[in-house]
Image 1: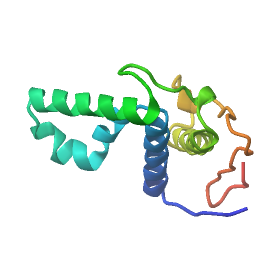
Image 2 (image 1 turned 90 degrees about the horizontal axis):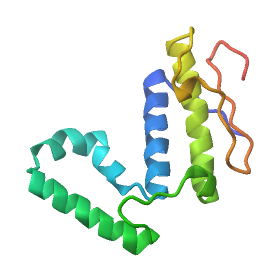
Image 3 (image 1 turned 180 degrees about the horizontal axis):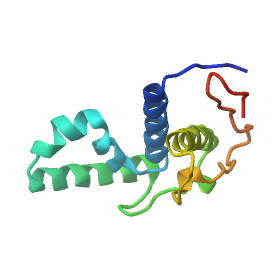
Length: 133
């Protein structure tokens, strides 16, 4: 087992990275366009035609790599094990961040107990001054 100490900002970036990893791994290639680096610097300056061309090219890549059509995606239950593991880790981090930010909870999925999709045990996460949960 490993322990990793993160700041809240680092945990948020790790969660966003795992989210991107699992979405791309499940065929949602457009998520690459939403990466903060590209979204703010490049994508906002694209013309609608250029953006459509870019998305069309992503459709061709998705078909060639994943054999998925434009609107097709692989759901986490049907994903391969590496994406399931990444999604499990994402859920645990997202859940902890949500409750730390809003101890009263909320209706979003991030407040629900993480569901295990992979064969691996769910990771454990706690604040530095808490017992591991």
